[in-house]
Length: 140
Image (cartoon, rainbow, N blue to C red; front, side):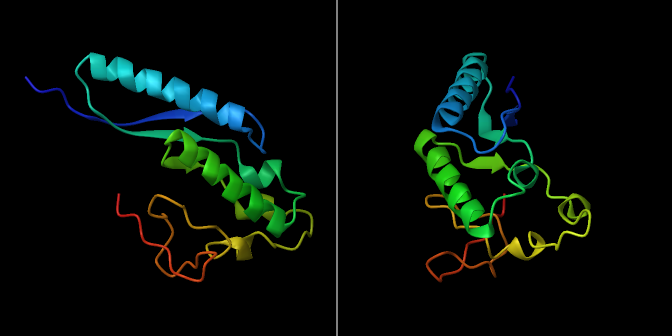
């Protein structure tokens, strides 16, 4: 009898942004050990993923350029440990536009996010990469 594949193992991180490379490496190790245990039991694990606290809540005071730099740095850390999927938490328009603060973060999507260096970028094809090209669309 064939065992069904496991679509994903997701690890939720409670650490506040900005995340460190040590935190990312530890999280990747936990996920990889879990994948190995499931593989040892005969299961195929299709993806490993991280889920973080809302980046816009933790870094609300950061400028758009500082946030883009951080997200690019985070992407490199994820690439270095082989994690292709990471959720940066929710981005609720209500919380981003509280108390009369201009909704500057809403214009950040999707063009403000950098392209992933080694994986297809999951934003629509109209998104622009830092190099002026277009990002590919994730179909998975």
